[in-house]
Length: 612
Image (cartoon, rainbow, N blue to C red):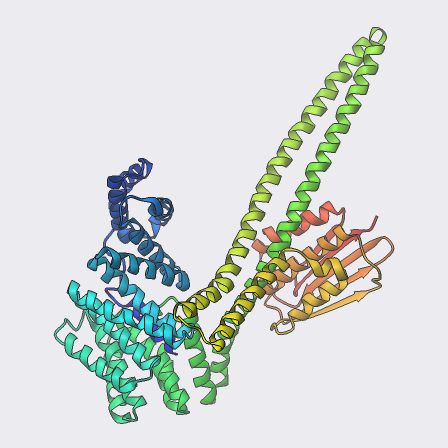
């Protein structure tokens, strides 16, 4: 529960949202990009682009991404000192917009440090308005050690000092609300958090209640939660009811619906913890049919968990099941994404080998044709006197055939180049995702621990070694996935059985059967069958909505038969003609096999591949 209240502060007014509409600066910015780097050009380019970037809408996103990429190349070598700071701020804000919170944290912290070095209090305050709430969430999310917490907590006082120097009341209030939330949820110092909330309310009471609606009511929500935790239940519930009533009276006011969503999550979870289930349901249902302005998928999942438990403990199984299904769907999507990433490795390997074989085959065929033509021409010359006319006609026809083959070879090479490029893109995305989701987080955790420890104890050194072991294991796993060692070592059947076993915890029940299958197939054929099975399983997980699925493999003297079936809803039309099944059909065609697809009452794909 704690991290979500911290994250909601990122959506408060004054936290760096876009205002106004984009101007007509694109042509001028583009002309600056094309100029040679210099002090004057860099300063003008970055300041004008930052103004455009802050105003531009989604329709200008491609242009903004292209310009930001160019500035990323120029900033490290720019002669204009603030270049790096402005680039870090814009890049961090882009990551924050995309919900890539760890990267956003990293770039915004760099921007904050750079603006501090430059003595730029105005921009230092702007960065902190985004960085401080994100930093507070990060301290909770990663369970940062006490030494590192002390370092990051010092940023609060610096941010507040800068905000007060800038004289922006909205930024000051945002920093103080974040600090109070940190004190409530991380330090659990309810009296200090209450004192801070009371101080915030005193400072904003003269502001326009309409424009500051969310600030007033988020602060009141903090007061209420602190009173409840301190055992002053009556006072806490009185404030809470005032917040709820104020918001319910404004059904068309976005900020009021936003506050009700926060009450549903935080207060509902509080009463669930106290086993006061009727009250938990009363407040949790405030989140139903409310607009969620957070746009954080795990925050929506948190609200779904609160509603699920509230309905379950109040004896409403049908409603509870609805939210349990949403929770499972969220978790299943993450698992399916990992399987898709694993399949991308095999797709890249298969496509690369396939294209290399096609190139070699076409080159050999072309060489053979050329040799045959040369022999024919030589024979024709020997008997030219007798059969001159016949030889001339034959040569013309042969040249036409050779030209056709050359054009075919050119076309195939172009197709191969495009496919190789696509395969490389898929693999880069997969590796980038694994590096970002696993290694980046662990390396960041190790960095924070090492930065906060000057003279490490043996226990701390042991912790560092454990984290390094985890990182080593991740690197080893990524490397292992690039080379199918299990398939090469044990063969096709045990490898497929391992894939099915790994899906044991998935909501879809998978079964694997193998009949009359002894000995090993040719290595290339095993790899290709394995790839086909992975892609068919991926289609079942992503599209079938099935409860049961079966993979069967059989072998006779002259063929191998593979069948993958499920009891789902059948593949949608765009999937039947999609890239996945197209790739499978191409593989089967290359192996001179046959494929059939039944797409009613579930989906059944049967593939027969010859062994000779």
